[in-house]
Each structure stands twice: as C-alpha cells, then as structure tokens.
Image 1 (spheres, one colour):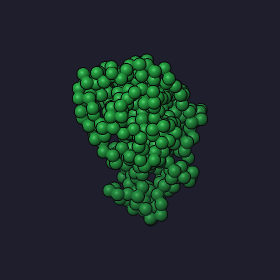
Image 2 (cartoon, rainbow, N blue to C red; image 1 turned 60 degrees about the horizontal axis):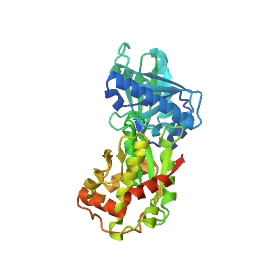
Image 3 (cartoon, rainbow, N blue to C red; image 1 turned 60 degrees about the vertical axis):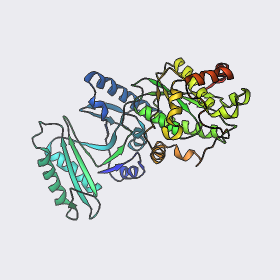
Image 4 (spheres, rainbow, N blue to C red; image 1 turned 45 degrees about the vertical axis):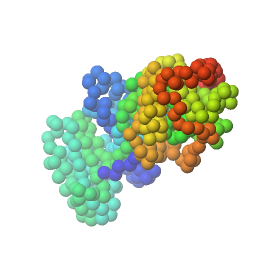
Length: 398
C-alpha cells in the first residue's frame, strides 16, 4: 500500500494515467468507538465539515453517502478533493477508488484491468481483500487467491510479495459494490471540528501556540484565536503570525473565522511596568484578556503553547490561578523536534524565522504565590490596563 502523509503530487499524476476513479473512500477511526447516539452526531458533523471544505475549494455537484464506517464521495474532481480532505479533522485517511459490480466475472475483469495499469514492469504486488459483506459467497482468502492468480496469468513479469510489495492492491466487498484502490492519503484523525465546543487560544510570537491550537481543533474544539501584537518589541511578528493564521484557516470549516488582535505592546508603552516585572505581567495580561474574550465568545477553556520546558512548573502553576477557566497545554509532553515536525505538516513552519526574540528582557518569575501576584496587579493598576486592551482589540475576519 502506498501511504502518503497529506501529499497528492504524485497521486495526481497517477490519477491521470488511465485510471478513472469514480469515488473517494473516507475512513474515520475514533468516532466509531463512541456510543450510537454520539457516533451519529459526530458522523453528521464530519459529513457537514467535508461538504463545507469541498465547497470552499470551489467544488460542487458531488454526492456523499455513508455506510459501514465509510463515507463515499461521488462526482467530485478527485485530484482537487485530495488536496482538501487531508485537512478535515476526523478523517483518518482517504483513497481514490473505482467501483465494481459484485458479480464475480465482472469483478475479476475490473481488478485485472486495474492491476494492469497500476503494477509496473517487473514489480511485486500483494492483493488484500476485505469482505465487509459477509453474505458474499467467497471468503476474503479465497477471493484474494482467485484474483491474484488472474493478475499473474495476465502479467507473467510480476511476482507476489505479501511482506514488502511494490504495489498493494485492495478490494473491499460491501453490500452493493466492490471498491478497488491502492493508495491512501493520511488525514489528521481525531474528532470532527466543532463537536467539543469552543476554546480561546493565546497566539503569540512563536510557532508553538499555533501548533497547540491545531491540536485542540483535532480534539473537536472550535477555536477563537487571540493574537497578542508585540510588533515594536518582536521584529516582523504581526506579519508572520497573521500569515500562519491564514494558513491555519485552510483547516477550519467555517464560513467566517474571527481573530482577535490585541495591541499588547501598548501596555508596555503606557503602563509604568518595572523592567524586572515585564515578562510575568505580559503573561498575566494575556491570560486575563483571553479569559474575558473567552467568556464573551462562550468558550470553555484557554489554550496556550506553553510547556514545562519553556516556562517552568512554578510559573505555570501561578498563571493557572490568574483565571477561572481551565487552561489547556497540548504541547506539555512534546519535545522541540516533534513540535517542528507537526508545524511542518500543518503548513506553518516555513512562515517562521529560525529565531523569534522579544526585546523585552527580565527575570522569569518574580511573584511567588497568588497573593504576591494580586498585590502586583493592584500596585501596577493592571485591571485598568486589561480594560484598555479589551477596548482596543480588533476583530479580523479570515
């Protein structure tokens, strides 16, 4: 089986080489483990998200059906659809396939013709049969042997290799049709966007906050991004982050996506914040503003790209107590290389320069408990600063 991680460049070429795919098979995994009621709700949302994403890409006139843990898309431009579907949360993988009748003679003809086009000169192959329709007269093994022999009779130059074949052809036997395919394009998996409610995300200068946001969307959350603009102190920050958010937009099945832009740099310009306190105050302001926006948007939690490695457990413990909403940190168990690999897959890593540095420097933690923090907020008049930032926040529609 040829398995691609969201890449269709070579697949698109194969689609044009004599194989006229009639359907795209969509697989989903975690949804099938839910109770019947929850599963039905999530399947409905997944199909709705697929329809929206395809229409956003300018595709129309297609038909979608669902049976036996599969979604089938007919009448769609296969190459263009395969650029869209790997960005739909909840999808484990997709395969372009051809439909064939269940009649054995006709099925044999379709499989042999498919193999003739797919298997190259002198290549090895394996034929895998999955019989979802248990009333079919032949077992999976019997059918695989029969069809494999037909291929060998037609192509004496090829050989069978069940362990490490050059090409792996699959035949799925279902209630009304058989489906023949040999490629899979990986999707993000997880749950459909929007089935688990809404979260607000603290978006800052580095790639981590975008990756954390993506991971929460993979868990079924819709996202309210809050970008904290520190442009005078972080070079090219606004252009970089907004471009990353535009790229993240391609994963989101919403007609309109609202992004809050908070001019956090103004707090440092206007408030009398001692240099030794600036990093902590900056974080506190992010949390407090995010909480207010989350409540306005009916979001249930705050998401950040922080980890113990980047901020320290004491600091995270203190920041959690600044707000009443739960704080989610999806990156807490990931190392830097894993985060970069995921950012590359999302399509945002290339946007960020190798190093993003803030010109505001201070010691890390200067409040040791919540009482210290509250005293600091009162002394600096941070409640007024928070109100000012909320008043000056812009809403961009992407």
